[in-house]
Image (cartoon, rainbow, N blue to C red):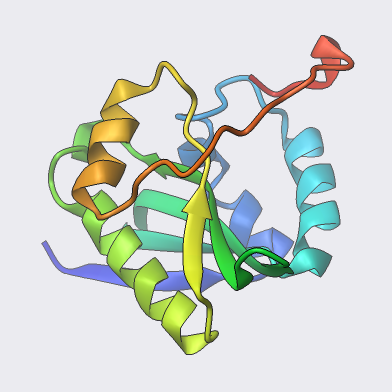
Length: 148
């Protein structure tokens, strides 16, 4: 399998891969996806995707920012691998690329959120060298606005 990694930096490039995002958010509409992306891109959001020919096998969003406790960091967001290609090294290809990207951007760390019940993701991230350092608390104000 000849794989290629691409950085997706435009809304057009990203919406072309909505079928992959729908493995994570099955009910997201094209309109909502475009609207969210239009708000995210000005904040350093990009996507990194692994392709075999024109078939997207997995992708992750990421963005860099700065916080007082860590300085500049890279955040992984919306990490998804096509279920047919899970446990075939696609996730590792993505996290290895994110590692390189964070170093290129001179980041001190890489952060991410994983839902508390997503034990498969927890195991994967532990195996990639990630460890929990705290809790991400959430207060839902309007359930109808959520994608999940």
